[in-house]
Image (cartoon, rainbow, N blue to C red; front, side, top):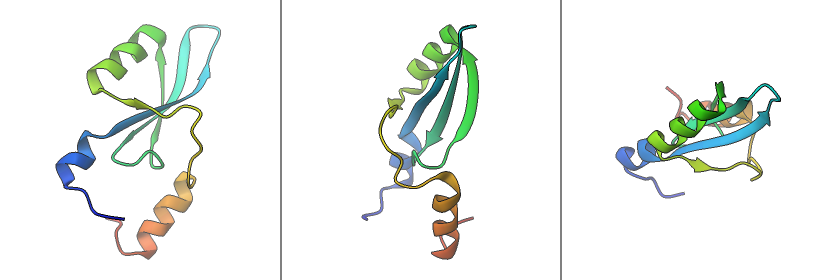
Length: 83
């Protein structure tokens, strides 16, 4: 895989909606640079929509993950890329 400049990596932001609760909260994953390494977040619908707009995210909901979070981190550590 060709390396992208760091500025391009930091501009790539992703969300994956995991659940829309009946009480209006949205459970989602947020990633910067690589959609397979993410943090889990929970926000009310209006805040989520604003968050997505401000961050200009790419919605990857429904797209399969190539690796789960642990496997992706382990692969980077073994390749000497982890910090």
